[in-house]
Image 1 (cartoon, rainbow, N blue to C red):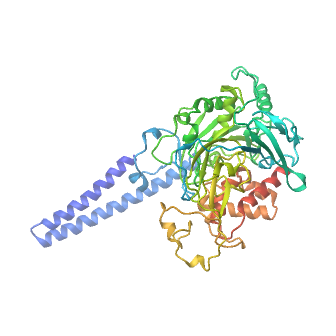
Image 2 (cartoon, rainbow, N blue to C red):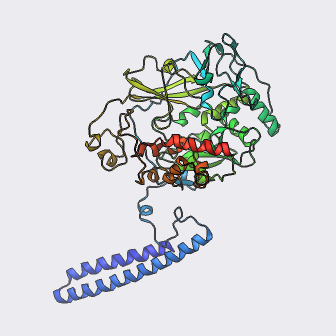
Image 3 (tube, helix red, strand yellow):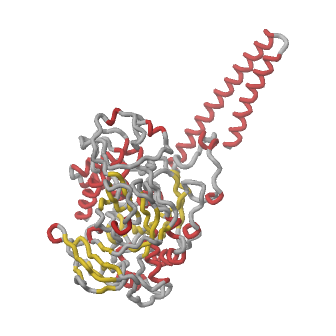
Length: 549
């Protein structure tokens, strides 16, 4: 019906144009002029009538669609095609017939210092650490089962949670335990290991994945020290060993600034990745969902595209389209009583190596990024590597900030700090401690912003040199609509943040706080004209909800 309507409209337009040309070529000026006016009026009347019919029909279709529960934002039920459908580029062959979600909201921050897709095998870290502070909801002083001076193998247990002894953390490398560092109130912050030159591993009892029961598989993962690889929504805490998740979600791409290319990460680890998916399938009664990258014309890695035993869905749009929380929201939103588990691609590979290699192998690819590096690149290392070891000799400037993760949601580190447990990126940016007088008035091209007061907002392909300046100071909340522009979720962020600040538990739960973690609102913090610590506010609300649950 839509194609017929389009043909009728185009025919009428062609008729109008042909009559105009005919009128200009006629011998008699008066007669041709009258004919042109007559046909023009008739054509205009037909067009108006046709437009009215189409509008009425579209309204009736929209009413029927709403009653049937059809999402009219995603499905065009109009008799006429949308303008963007007429000029939309051809769908790549690898996406033909595939489920694709196009996110309209979000924002990409293009920064200088993207890691070149070459792996430097000469960079070696010598010191590694497991940090209890990377995990929410565990005791500040877990039970440490090793002492300074002990020799450990990769996979040996270092400590476990006192209240949940089945939560165990294993050594990422073999070597000597050289420190058990403590922070405020004697809380343990790091268990540090000086790595051996040749890695040795604790042998694991073989387990038949196909024949093992769910409880046997859970017990194996806990004893191997791999259970902390699995995170749970809501709250983004370690997965509850007693729970059965509704579903498990994995995002196969990262859309954050300077994020590593996960197609490169999975190269050579295809078998381990698939085996990790097979193991996860046994842990849920629901489905394992893979979020795949549809942002450009390139197909994702075959390990992702040809993965078996999973539900695959493609996502197109600006950051945070790669966030697993955003993908959960659009695939199968969490109700307040639901539990879902999430993993990163590198953690799935580590999980799979338990079965393909029979050892706890935390080897991973880390992206060294940022404009303050001589050579942004990828390096092979292990979980929890020391920041200074990975960046030794690569700094172009000594007045910098080190970040474990990306610039939006990462954590500040020192050269003596360590990569966080779930991070596979180090970002180095200029320390922005200079004050710029009336900076908001200057037409700077090096200020990433969504505000049209900056020329950079009109240049979507412009790259920026990042620094840590906030370009303003904290002030009262103001309603600008900026949060909604960059959060592609059906949530009212401003109302939610205010409900958290006033401690309105029922309202924050009703506004969808259980669907969020800090990284999902990191862009809201970036665009916030009030300079509110939005991620900190969300964590405050999540902790309140967790205490009440």
